Length: 201
Image (cartoon, rainbow, N blue to C red; front, side, top):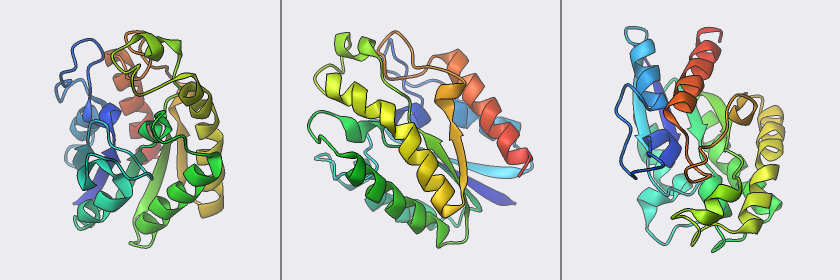
């Protein structure tokens, strides 16, 4: 059976905006996708709260996407869904678009050289609610502005590397609870969007 690796951050993990707990497997998008594709694909859930994509995290390797990704690629997935990058815009890091672009390219090329198909998911655009949330110590106004350019960077990278691309901002928005994470309804939309993309590959 072919394998799908869902590699990402807290929105892949299934972080609940209001409680900080984890959505169950029937609510988080990667869990829903696993159920919908049961018998066709083995879905590997590899989300992690506060995981960066391209910038070294002070919390270590597991929280630094490009460093821990090779460990998950040892599972030899046939398809990789890469949904990461919003934590890189935290105010501690202040990344430029060029830094993001180069980091994203590195991760994508690491995946593509294994022969796996890649579906690149643009990170969510933040809104002002994040400045009033428990994450206000991590994100500021500049973080919000930087998040707005991420979809264009991801789309350009997907075009250049000839891989799949989905901008979830076209289908759903982050919750007003914290301006960063998704509601259960959004997780369902994400799961269905990715499912439809995969069955049409």
